[in-house]
Amino acid sequence: ACGKNVDPKNLNEANAYPRFINVECSLPGHNYKDDIFNYILDSSLCFKVLRRWTVIDWCNGYYDSLTMQQKFATWEHLQIIKVANKNPPKIQEDCDTIIRCLNDNNCFSTRIKITHSAGDDCTPDDLIAVEWIRVVHKYFL
Image (cartoon, rainbow, N blue to C red):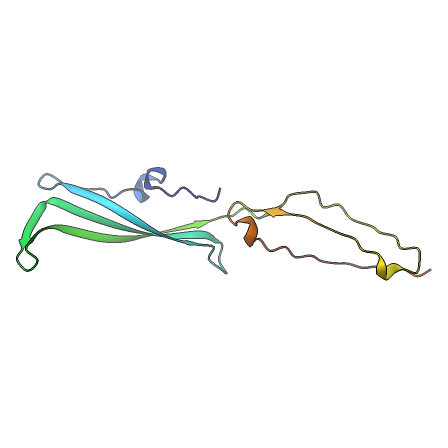
């Protein structure tokens, strides 16, 4: 539903993990951290992921005399993943036309209760806004 699984192993190769070329004299390792931003208003996005990759070369180390620690060469990259949903929300029940004939003088005291629910691949149910259109026809004979 709406691309919720953006783990690198589920992405195509070009967008998945870092690729290393010519690693004869290095020992690269990688890690990532995701910051996920849900339900971006005024956009067609379900969510956006800011994936911060860190790559380290375990063979390219040096001693930092200021911190008195062994350090290794590292690189960082920000990958932006935008997940959109092209499927519109769906009304869950049938939408039958409701006709109510008011043949007496108590037309203002008659109430009709209409309920429907909608679902969406991307938007949680509590964030779906439902809008009603009321059409009233008055016929006088």
